[in-house]
Each structure stands twice: as C-alpha cells, then as structure tokens.
Image (cartoon, rainbow, N blue to C red):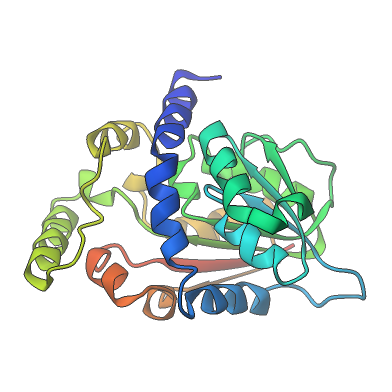
Length: 252
C-alpha cells in the first residue's frame, strides 16, 4: 500500500459516520427514486436474469442499497473498512443480498467480463491513478456492459484562483441562505492536503475522462453536464454551485 493510499483510507474510515449521515439524507423524500431511475436508465437491457452490478467505492452504500432494493444482483467494494462497516449497517434488511468486499479500485479482484454494469459516485477524483482504474473497470465489464460515473471537479479550487473565489462564494451563500455549509467539516484540511497529491484536480473534467475512456477501448462515451440540476436537492445546489456534477456513461 502506498503512503498516499494509506492516508486516503484512514481519512475516509474516520469520516465514515458523518459522511454516512449526509448521504442517507438523500434517501428521504423522492431523491432515492430519482437517483435509482437515473442509474437504471443507463443500464444495458436485461435478458431475463437480474443485471450484475458492481458499485465501486460504495462508501456508506447508497448505490448498493437503492439498487438491491430494486432487484439487482449487487456487489459493493470499497478500500475503507470504516465505509464498508457503514454500508453494511445502512443496507439493513438488504445487507445479506449485497456482496461486500474490501478492494482497491485500481486493481479489482474479479474475472474479466464479470459485470453488466458498474456504478460509482464521487470516487474518481480521489484516485491516485484514475486511468489505471478506468482500464480495470473496462476489463471486468462484459461486452455491451456500461459504466455510470457521477463525479465533479472536487478540490479544483486548490489549483485555480478563479475556482477558489467561486468556492468561497458558495460558502458565503450558505450563510446568507441559512443552510448547512458542506464545505467545512472535521478534518477538511487533511483532505485538502491529500488532494494536492492527486491528479484530477489539475485536469479539465469531464473532457479528460471522455478522452481516456475512448482510448482505453470503450465504444461509446457520453456525458451529461447538467446532472446536478436534477440529482441534487436545493441545499446541495447552493453548496456545490461552483463544482457541478457530471454523469459519465461509457459502454464497452
């Protein structure tokens, strides 16, 4: 294990309880249905058997839970033991129907062509070598399988003065509107330091992702840069106005 990967794992294991609480709030009301319907709309067609879905970087298990509830054959992996514990707990009655495993997203311990779909949320920005990870995800997808990746240019403000000003404005906007500020949290400075050693904060995304995925061999790649407009609630939209999310769909 590299020192950087060790630092990332320790950070997310420590943050698992608070991050889990935040994610589970999105299960309330109709947001679970919106996320699930968006993912399922991007899946390949079913052929009689439940689709085999791999949730990479499951975190507190949000994707794993909402997809298991809808009958999919779900495997969920994460490198953080703390996050996996939270995911198992959050899955509740569905925990036994989800295969949980500790695994490095760069080196998946699965055979080639094992899954019909891969889903991941807010993970790739956090990887030491995202191109290597994408290549391994391609390997474990079956031909015709699809990868759905929701992410954003997290921590780009560390490398761009204009983005920093926009990020700081987001913080002010939360105060003015009297809503919780997601930008300030325990040990936030630790992740900022870690992010300075990660590659994607310095790159133009999702353009980088599209080029990389096509070079790896994906036959079709599309990106919805408006994903935040229908996947985030009003509080999240204020908090993340300067870092809008995008949804990548890539077919093998």
